[in-house]
Length: 169
Image (cartoon, rainbow, N blue to C red; front, top):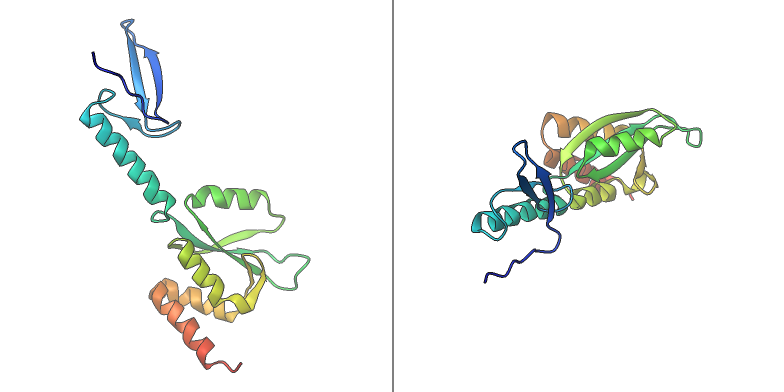
């Protein structure tokens, strides 16, 4: 007798087909991608492992983006602010920011990257930090964005780092 094993987290849905028979559909997790093959077959296990690997890569930041959003002038500040953040679902993040913001928001730049890049940008612009992920908008950030868009992100980071080494302390 074969023992049936159901891995933790596997989700399923049973549907009645037009001919009256029942069909079970398997998913890697609730809301996850569908899995091909029968439960326990090598095809099924392979599909499951691929789905978990994709989810892990996504969680580790390989699919994430670092974004810069300019916020409209807030009554509390005499200048515009820029938010530097990271997201694996930028479209939803922007929608939630717009919903919770009393000022206008405009996307300045979006770069492939993860939390490491976000932290590096936060450190580069630390002298402009207002609070948390919000920074004072100025010519340095504008020039950084311009170089990043025209040349590369690495060139833009090098430009800011070179400027900080030359600036008097």
